[in-house]
Length: 288
Image 1 (tube, rainbow, N blue to C red):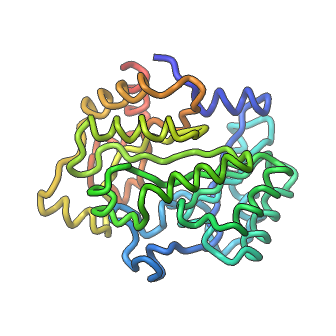
Image 2 (cartoon, helix red, strand yellow; image 1 turned 30 degrees about the vertical axis):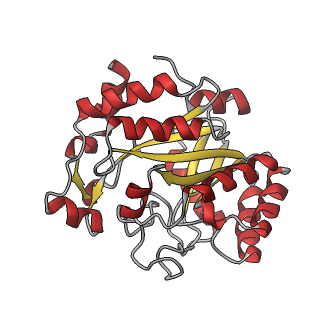
């Protein structure tokens, strides 16, 4: 089944292939610093989902330059997106956000910013800053929703209600920021129908893009403790392919699919082990 991939979207938008450079700006998260909780989301790694980002001790410019060197053999255009990936990237005083975001957006090789955050960390001052940045170069804001189902959201310690997500999307669309939503497929005790309900809901909420992420059980997470207790099963590759197929059938053609799976750091992966072979997984998705 054909779908509108991020690769295709970026080529249409920028005229050629564009690579993301993952950045760790040294932020934290309200689910880690005690404002909501101190344990983080139940599935989140110690790197705050930024395990492949550069070192936070480096400046934003240094991280960009290092990221460029990592992919220099794969790219000819020299165009990159600065992806603020680790932890919650709008959870800091606005003057600090401004300093880091402007350092990235003013880099000559950066054509856009991608900012991963939570819907409950988008106050008025942050929205004003995003609006300002978006007038300079395109800005993508990636929201970690994961599920629309309250029981699951409480279990994973998401820390905000669905209405907060709705308001965040509405506010981002008012300022014309490209809005991308993360969904996890395979969360404990969710049926295929539950997952599809989440996909349907977010597609109707006005988003521009979607990331479909396979649930990974990683070392040193509370999710790993529950998995070892036998409290839930992870998806098989066949089950995941079937769910993806159903998702693609209900996602409108105008919504860009930024991801069809995902991979945790192999050294930390507990389950599903089949997901550790990224090439095999991507080939299986393509063949399916």
